[in-house]
Length: 331
Image (tube, rainbow, N blue to C red; front, side, top):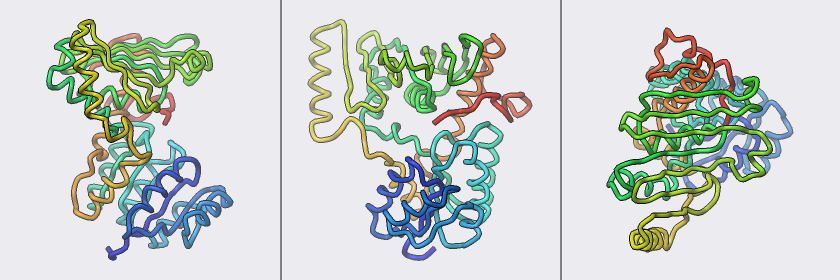
């Protein structure tokens, strides 16, 4: 690889801008190419960020040999095919979430990158947020108590991923669909047993009324000493406790912890981590195997709702839900 890393961004819609902005923070980076099936969108991004070339077919971009790494910001159902072809060409891959649409696609992506020796990272930027790291620390050190209930409301893959990241691996899931089981229209409710013994409750719906009532994209981690709650894209963190003295103590700790920094972080903090992995031949913080876990969580939730039976993890390759979730997985 040359001293300058050449970047290609596949998909020139909304997520491509934050990726490109993040790459421009590094002096040894050249944003060389934008690719989009809508040529005018690729051209607009290329002009904005000084890219020298545009493509309307990702295969032409990959075959051109003009990039060392790519960011996949295209439609969710295209992630696997693009990542696999890039890996086969020796190109490192940073993939937007969700990683893929099935566990089989995830495994194919992982196998392709491992075979070629390239890096595969999945962009779950909210894992990097300082408040996420702090909440995880509070739970692991017992400062929230010894009984924890995780609660989330929101449709996107972020919700499944963040709860699993904070609470740890999942043992079993039970779930129910509402209405006619129409994805993105009808709600789903799930209860989760984590391997740690803690439990969780998830409520998901993209219905407009849920959004208007402020029930979208919120998480709470409820301990018998302390509760931490936040809106996923809100720069804040609410703490509460039944013990007034302890509540005051933890508010002071929060004020000191975040005195000189945001509760959240730059829009694509994973770019820096990804580039560090490429440059120093290290494992990314969120490699393909981690991105796969959120897909397995969703697949197990869908299966539990569709069958009416609890589902234990892992989901094996012989399972019908391994190759197809029968429902799209959304970003």
